[in-house]
Length: 345
Image 1 (cartoon, rainbow, N blue to C red):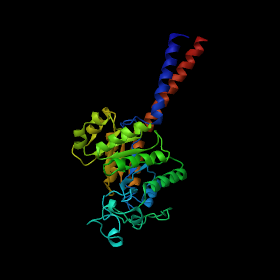
Image 2 (tube, rainbow, N blue to C red):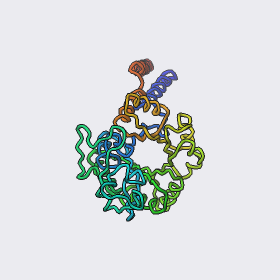
Image 3 (tube, rainbow, N blue to C red):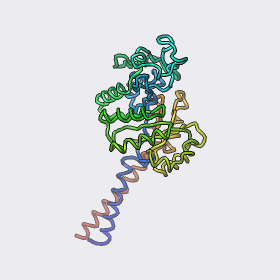
Image 4 (cartoon, rainbow, N blue to C red):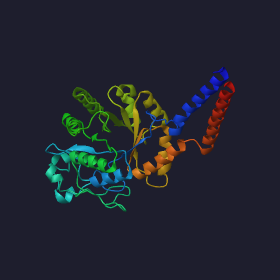
C-alpha cells in the first residue's frame, strides 16, 4: 500500500472513531459523564402527600430515577417514611391520637398507632388527587414502613421494566437506626452496584455505615448532606475517604459551578436540594444547574425535572448542519481512499 493511500485510510479510520462518541452524545460535565439523576424528593411531594406510596408511585410513573424515603424510628423500633421528627405537620395525629409527652414525636408512638394516621397534602401544589392518576396501593396515603417502600419499589420496577433506585435518608444519628437501615437493604437482596444511595446530614452516621458495610462486604453509595459551607468545613477530600458524594442545598452560599467542579476534583458526586419551583421559572433553573454539571437533583416535581433534562440533553447533540458537514467529510475520505486503491491496482 502506498504511503498516500495508507494515510487516507488512517484518516478515514480516525474520523470514524471520532464519530462514535458524538453519535451517542456530547460529553457532559457530570462526574461520570452521564445524564444527571432525577430524584423524587419525598416522592412526587409537590403534587401528592409526601412520603406515601401514592406519592412515590406518581413519581415513578413520571419517570423518576430514584425515590427518596426519609426514615424515622417508631417507639417499637420500626423504620417508617417520615421527614419530620414530629407527626404534626403532615398527619392527622392531633385529631386521632393526641399528644404524647407534650408533643407528637414519631418515637413516642408505636407502628400500630402510626398506621391509623392519614398523611395530608403539604406545600406547593400538593393535593390528594392528580389528574389521570389512580394509585394502586390499597392505602396510598398512610405512613409506610421502610419495608413497604422497598416492596413497592421492587413491584413498580418489575411493572416499569427498569430498576427504580432507592435513596433512603437516616434522619437522626444513632447506631440503632444506622444499623437497621443498612441491614434492611441487605436483607432485601440489594447488592453493591444496585441503584442505592444512603444519605445523612450527620457525617458520623455516614462514617459508621461505611465501616459496617465494609465489614459486611458491601459498598453502597453514601452521601453527606449539608450546606456548601458545612461541606467545606468537613473538607471535600476528607469526605471522599468514606463517602461517594455530597448533597448540597442549592440555595446555600458558595454552592454553584465552582463548588461542583471542586467536588468532582475530589471524585465526589454532587446532588442538589431542593428544586421546588413550579412556576415558569422552574425550567430555567434546572437548565442552569444541569449546565453546571450537577450529578443529580432532588425535585418535588419529577415531571418538570425530567422535561428540563430532556431539553438539556437534546441541546448537547450536534446541530443537523454539523452532522451534514461531518458526513460529507467522511464520504469524501472514503471516495479518496477507494480511488487511490484503484490507482495502485
